[in-house]
Image (cartoon, rainbow, N blue to C red; front, top):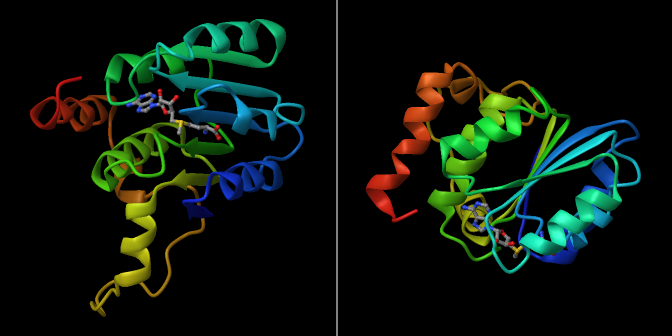
Length: 179
Ligand SMILES: C[S@@+](CC[C@H](N)C(=O)[O-])C[C@H]1O[C@@H](n2cnc3c(N)ncnc32)[C@H](O)[C@@H]1O
């Protein structure tokens, strides 16, 4: 399943519903862990990734209090951050992405697309208003495409990527924005 939401309460509620006992979760953008609190008691491992200097200390303390939590301080648009996360887990059951509900949908999609291609989650939960609006408006009008795609939390196209291709995908960010 790939779920897209905007309202932060709904995001946290979905995390609580979707994460099962013993699941491995990669969460990008936990901030001060209000979303992490929704599932941390059920997860066998949670890898939290955030670049915020305002929440860095909270995240260090949170991970030291919870034996199943690892914190990676870094920008999810940077391949080196992805490599740090891969030191903790090689795949996950749930990938959650909340860079801020109003963030540019292209940025959120690219971060989610690349990270999900690496960790191949069963479920993804993405918080982004722009992607939600796009999904509400868009209609696929091409009969050559399959009627349905496999139910998973990642895209087959991205999943075929090698680490080098994944790196290239994230390196492209440097052409758009200053990291
Ligand atoms: C709206 S807050 C997340 C709120 C949290 N999920 C909750 O439910 O309370 C967004 C977080 O994403 C982080 N963030 C934004 N862009 C990021 C990026 N490129 N890489 C890593 N973290 C990022 C910010 O530092 C911030 O902590």
